[in-house]
Length: 397
Image 1 (tube, rainbow, N blue to C red):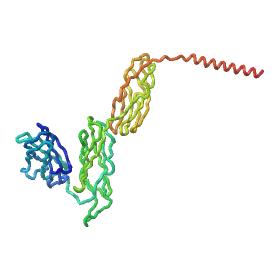
Image 2: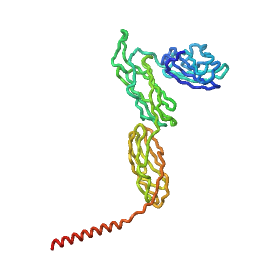
Image 3: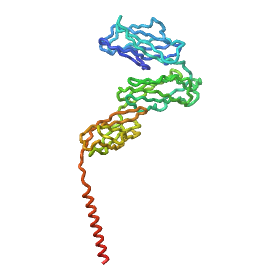
Image 4: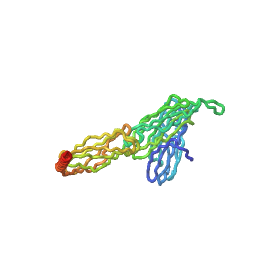
């Protein structure tokens, strides 16, 4: 069978004895499934293993408000499914007339061989209202606004979409018939991906957007702490006035674990138990960080200020700070470790991390006497005064 473009594709693999079976929903029509009407669902079973499945069967087990057109059509025997091959079977389900707009689920079971164990997976489809004759089309206006712009592992934040009715006139004539150009957003859904969770439910709209009108929708996002750096794609889909005006967008979301780099700009050294340490603080994260501060810690050393507050830093911005350090004993020359801790915010997310641990040197410097130079200055002043006095006496004579 020819596989058409996938509107919904989710699958879970089951590997057994040389064959690896994956079941997924290839597509369903109409989208959304209409209340009180039939919906066709195409189930795809793929063998990605090296061995074949001898007697494969697939079974549809719908849940309310979905039901099979006939129980006799619940099980389909596919038979032999060789490696690197796939089979597609279409089921026809009815959406109960009393169903509510939202999401409906159903189970798909598959059996690798006769009398073998059934493996079950659960899938969902969207249930919507009837189609409308309005011809307004909803489009994304500009890029979605993300806060923060680039997430870090463990961050929470938001993505805000602006949806606009792209129509410019209040009516349009198609084949001699006039239609209004209002646009409806029956539902708008943002779906996450591995490690990125959308915690805001699907938006279900009740009103309309006139030509040129727009609305904003905001979704809350959670990024798992174990997510690797990279660009991830979320699925944003809207159901419009009719099936012809449904939209699906792939929304990129960047995750980057880089933050601050703090580098000593001169040797980390205290002379005779005290001195000033200097550091360059650089923001290497792709977006601005706020509430940036730096804290030093070392055994037996007091630092002032205890925490140096830098404030907001733009990407690639460099800031030089100086922190005074003093030991409890000026005779202590044993080297020690100094930990450099950074605090900052990415969006509303507070972060604290030990950026680096460096060696702090404590040295004793012999202080030179200042009495000799002072005496020399005094002698020069006395000689100069004496010379000036003798000069005036000679001039008077």
